[in-house]
Image 1 (cartoon, one colour):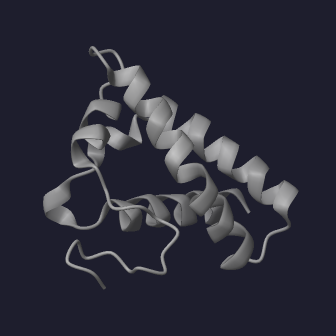
Image 2 (cartoon, rainbow, N blue to C red):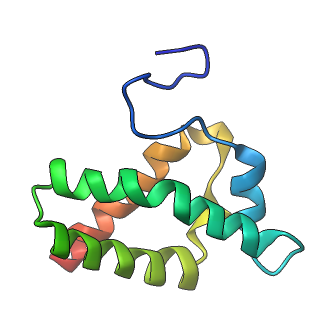
Length: 105
């Protein structure tokens, strides 16, 4: 672990909480741009998690990730619930994704 609390071998970049907070409010100025940036930054490690940790084939993992983005992040506004005082953002995302995938499968 480094001083940011991130594992140097992790595919996740250090969390930019100001970006997460803006992304949680896409109707506010800069919110849609922030949401897009979050999706671009977190898509590869979330996909890798589904393939490596969950053992899903890449095409199935991609389908489930796209459904998670549509149903949880966009429709349910998941990022509004992210709270830096409750833990790491990547843990929040991975837990949410794992629960979604378990329900879908």
